[in-house]
Length: 202
Image (cartoon, rainbow, N blue to C red; front, top):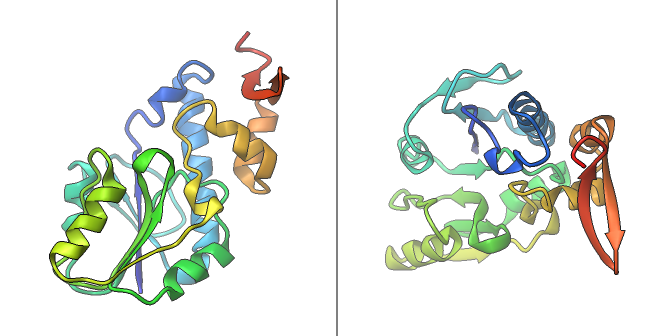
């Protein structure tokens, strides 16, 4: 099965600006990408980036929006799409995703996003705008495709906000968790609640 990894190389992870500089955000995004590619190493992944980026795998630069760039590569061949900001991902998680037998397999993210897809129906097209998990289910049903959901904590945690980094520090074992610790990331606990902090972020 072909595996695509979309990557936002242009101004990555802007919502992490309260805790990381532009240079740091790029480094963090590329570190998360490396963790995802490591989990996919047995599946010959291809990165689809919106700006040039160095990776150890074939990389195509496509500056179109995410939905258009992905749909242009859905040509009827069974294809998995795995987001690049899933630092808790593991090879076992990927095996489970790819082994799920359905025309469309969806791994939801928090807040209504879609963190991974497997597309086996040639009529299916992605739509990553808004509440994409709902839209992808509706699209699959509209074309008569079978739909399965992979309920996975490790696939469900994508990094967009500083709060998401708490999960990486608590549960991550890869390069991303190590990068955060090397850049003074830690977990503050106040009144039973946790949040990500940096020594340099105040």
